Length: 285
Image 1 (cartoon, rainbow, N blue to C red):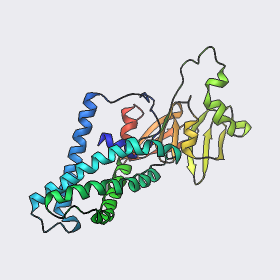
Image 2: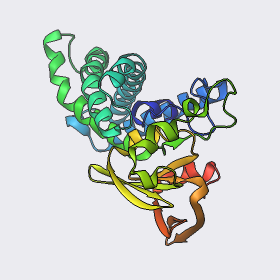
Image 3: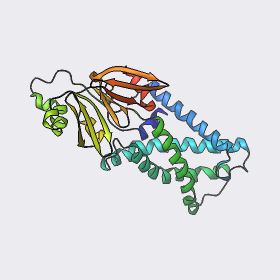
Image 4: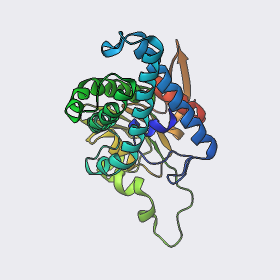
């Protein structure tokens, strides 16, 4: 579900190759609609087969049509809530780079919204009457399904966060103003590491280990915040707790389906399965 991908993935702006203002073309829109349709029908079939929420007394065909209508309506509501409701909330609550918290907030917003759609659709299949007093009864089942779909999307749609390499700085601006990697991040490091080559970052609890040509050091910082300040050094997240500079890669190791990167300084950086597809498409592995 390409368009629902935006609901739960880390909202980091653009990747190395993409423009943050790029709009999906016609083919992407058609593909996104098709994926929403397929996913909705697949979930409807699953819920019909397991007789979810005591719907087993309804004939199978009618049961499938009922769940298909609910899944399609829920998908459309989810896209609308994400594009309009979460657009403001994600910045105010600082949800960027925190997909699980983003998913919790999204689920809280989706539950009453989709419950309203379920309340409106259910009487069309003759299962109840339109009575606003019955509306709250849908909160629990809708919340459970929304949480399950949110979890699946978080696990399957994660993308690596990438930093950008600058080309030639504008001649009218001094380098100190056009190189955030040096100004914003390097100044956080101990003096002997400030001019060293940065090979990788790895998260350790609340701290961040910075691997450089002058050795490693620990600073108190979130990985997501650090990557945002590394604009100017081409690199990518390879694991939920690792970021790697592309120039630091010396070798790629594959064993039993697992991939890792050997970096300068004898550093071994893992590549998680959820990031392998994107990194391969970008020519990293």
